[in-house]
Length: 246
Image 1 (cartoon, one colour):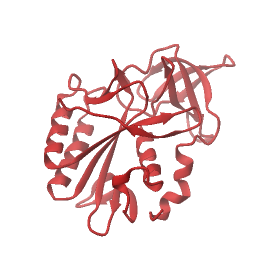
Image 2: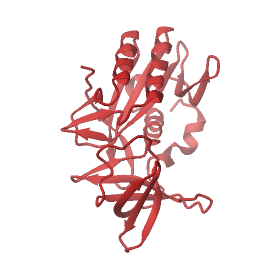
Image 3: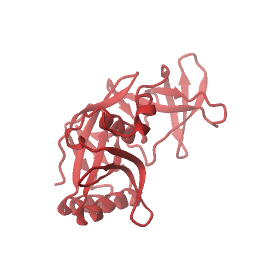
């Protein structure tokens, strides 16, 4: 595919779940990264919840959820909460998924504007110790990408973030600074559900994030929003989703 070998060895294992997901019913999410789930056999397990923020709209007790099994006895909670079913729609809640889907999509040439780059670096370092989620290296220029996970939807509108997040504001400001220096910079949002028709920054939750998005766009930073295609077997890149900053 013309990309570096670091992807070829592991990217295909990322978004196809390596073993069948375990189905259960959400009892409750508590603390920050923990959820209790009642499995179909009646037993109760505690699963890792790999998502920061309040998880608006996706933590209602009684919903069907699906867990992956790491198979690692060294982990305190070997099971990881991956999906929840809401109104017949599977919703991905793992915040690590967007970067994995992006890498897979780059390797498979699924995003036309990312074709032609010769190397891919994950958690790349640039400048004086600055980090970026993904950097694509090209003959004439590089492309710097930060990824964002979206699972909150209200009235058909996908919203982000679901709680005030200085870290996310910083990520967008970073892209603006990169674009101002003449490089290509992209904010990549993956909406992990299908029941929405547009994406918007959640101004009512974090107005600073909206301001950062507007400022980044004014510098030439790009905004890409895609829906994910989700089944109980895999999560892959879906179609682009319209967005509005108004």
